[in-house]
Length: 181
Image 1 (cartoon, one colour):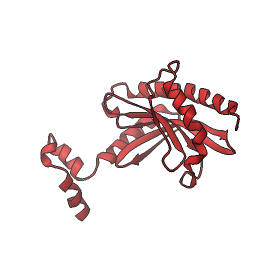
Image 2 (cartoon, rainbow, N blue to C red):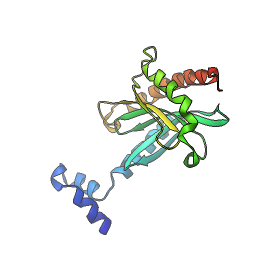
Image 3 (tube, one colour):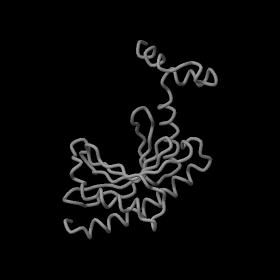
Image 4 (cartoon, rainbow, N blue to C red):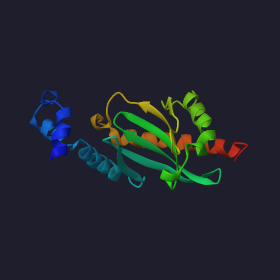
């Protein structure tokens, strides 16, 4: 109970439209509801593999596009991630993520940056998110609204997965042509 009191002190009752919103916020149920919502989305997108998780209290879903991409004697995956109002195309180590090092993908940074600037690949991924500590690099775009407000969410995600497949094909082609590969 002490944690609940501490949490609700940061939130003001006046910030919420009604008792239902206040109940959800004061009992820290936002993330649980987001995860439930995203789990239903994953079921609708099958057979595409989706994984629901969270960071900093906001639920997210990853849809893996391609596994087992070999680069510098390690295996990586690409995918699409949806969280709040952001969509990311990512390149990540396939196993032992917590033991990975950002240096492992130094060569991929410039490739991802080029993809984000390439006008021929106009999927809207403009921001390069360099790895900070571990091997996760992405390019992202902001949406006008949070995903749960979208009336065509399933179709939107399916289109982003198709876009991600095209980016994956381009990226893997570039990785194979890399002199160090």
